[in-house]
Amino acid sequence: MVQSASQQDVLEIVGRSSLSGHVKIGGAKNAALVLMAGALLCPDVCRLRNVPNLADVTKMADILSTLGIRIQHHEDILDIDAREISTAQAPYELVSQLRASFFAIGPLLARYGVAEMPLPGGCAIGARPVDLHVRGLQSLGAEVTIESGVVHAAIPGGRRLQGAAIHFDYPSVGATETLMMAATLADGETTLHNAAQEPEVVDLANFCRAMGARITGAGTNTIRIVGVEKLHGVEYSVVPDRIEAGTFLLAGAITRSEVSLSPVVPEHLTAVIAKLREVGCTVVSDTPNSLRVLKADRLTGVDIQTQPYPGFPTDLQSPFMSLLSICEGSSVVEETVFENRLQHVAELQRMGANIRVKGHVAVIEGVPLLSGAPVEATDLRASAALAIAGLAADGTTILQISVTWIAAMTILSVRCRHLALALPVRP
Ligand code: EPU
Image 1 (cartoon, rainbow, N blue to C red):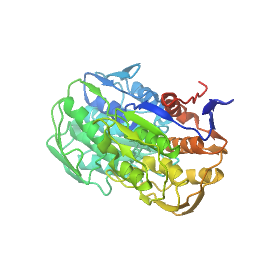
Image 2 (cartoon, rainbow, N blue to C red):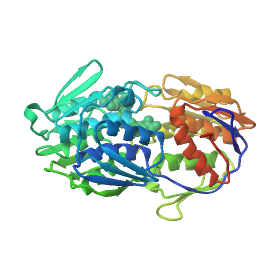
Image 3 (cartoon, protein in one colour):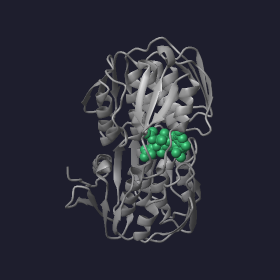
Image 4 (cartoon, helix red, strand yellow):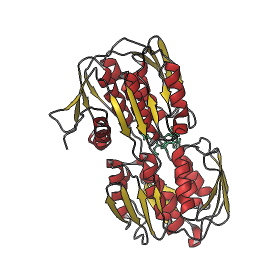
């Protein structure tokens, strides 16, 4: 069971919990954020449905508002009115807090002809440069300079971007999204080679297509975009959050409980389900849009390497490591996507996990039981990892979470109520 604690940014988690029930999965955070940016492409009103109620969504709305975009948020519906864009200068204080807001540089440039976007900077999981975004925009004919930490992009002569063949050094999710959006309004055809294949990229392509864009190949490593004159308003529902769904499967697995989830697209979790089965969990899909993890008896360690989709997602690396820390035998986890995404290890060690780290590799020797402890999380996914570790641990875990992650963790707690759990966070 999980109870409220005395401080606003603290979760008190009483361990050895058994979960049961059904969880309703919300819309994908990372799809919703980029769809909000994508709505700038359209001189009309777009309605997004199934938008998760998270601090990041509010921040993104605040950033778009500074550009003159009108946004109305009601429950899970966002109405984005981008008929008028009053400025192309995004404010540093806000962009630095939300990397996804940088992705608005593509649609802003394509629609407005200029864009000034502060560099988003590094974050708790790595340096996170934007060179692939910048080089891609240059390939489309934009003049891009970086001065005093601000990226200035402009289309020479006030013309349109020009379609081009772009080859990414790495299948970056954000760069693929930025360039795909920019190319929808370019003259001619753009081909993105070695593009990211994540479901959030496909959701963005579907959203842009619904607005009238001509895009093929999203979900493969080669995306073709034929620029069109103008896009039009649409109503669109955000894809279910595969990372949230995976987190709840892991919550069920680590507490040896039966938990079902919907709506979810099971194929989006193929790599995660394969690893859960290898560990010894039974995961079934009773209907095309649901998943259920069954109570497991014996759990054994496995090796994991994070990769771009369809490989094992970096966003589920830390919660999966919580599970591996109580699996029998040894496991090796290699983080290849971000250079600094093993910070939760020190916190899991405080809870009694036996983990050694060398570079970007963690070697885990399973222990029978974790013990509750005061722990601190550095990013959203690490928070989730420590929360589910706390559910399985002996005793109480006090989890300090940055205010930034409170809203997302509140979602976790609210959804946990459906699992016959209480996990209130003080408002
Ligand atoms: N990279 C570069 N140059 C670039 C862009 C990326 O070197 O111009 C590097 C990054 O530094 C990183 C790797 O490429 O090492 C992958 O980064 P990618 O661009 O694919 O990630 P992103 O677009 O910044 C999105 C999600 C992340 C998720 C990653 C990988 C959003 C808003 N964020 O980030 O989500 O981990 O893709 O799937 O879509 C999270 O939700 O907690 C989160 C961090």
